[in-house]
Length: 351
Image 1 (cartoon, rainbow, N blue to C red):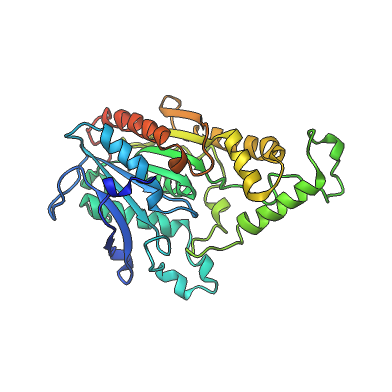
Image 2 (image 1 turned 30 degrees about the vertical axis):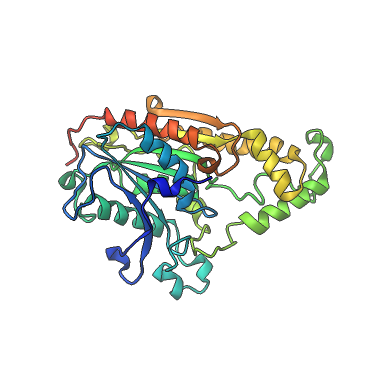
């Protein structure tokens, strides 16, 4: 049972300066008592949770509850969850959607990244248009699930030196089409069933590819209007570029990367859920999908310094929505990251 009411206040609806015609729903849990004059500084930590396409900010309820209970009384950690435009409690859509030929592809991840930046500025009390050095913003930890991981990565690339930590939970495979790149095509003339692992049936492959195309093809839109058409172009590699973490030095080339922890779904549980949802033999998930996804995650741990990377960790017993099914694991990894981020020097060197 969700413990959302024990931690978060009621939904708060705010307006961001760059999209003043629409409101966005948030749940804001500040370390300090709310005040119009509160400004988060580089001594503070701001955790922002980024949903997938099929979940809302409510999915972080139990994680937040457990994290807050474990933090010391006078902690410096503020937590923000929100529903993107057109998602969950945010019934207003991104203004771009109304002008789009296809509203289900009305905006993309670059728009979502700008929204995160505006939210960080709004709740930390800093000017999003000012330089990083001038603002001395808080240490930012982004916790993402699914497409939320892609938003987190793209944010860290777009705003080097801003992100101190990334906790990536079953990241969307941004550089692949699950309909065509993971499962072999049994109707391809070169397909040889004798070369496939035992238990793989052409009819099951055909059915799986059909399901993947119907649900996960980048051309498939969504009610939120967040398009995945250009996702491969935005994030073409799992293992690059290297990210610049908080705080950056004058030369970003000599800067450390952020702390990164990568968590993969539970291999057996994910296969079990695939059978329950699609009626397809678990062999296909175990043989094709799981190794493909794990390899992608192995790339993600390479986008920071080796000593700041952790993973790949298997969330045993969890499917894709790890924060809902293993909040205890996510809590442990987030607390671990908070403790690491707290040790970072507060000397700001970026000019």
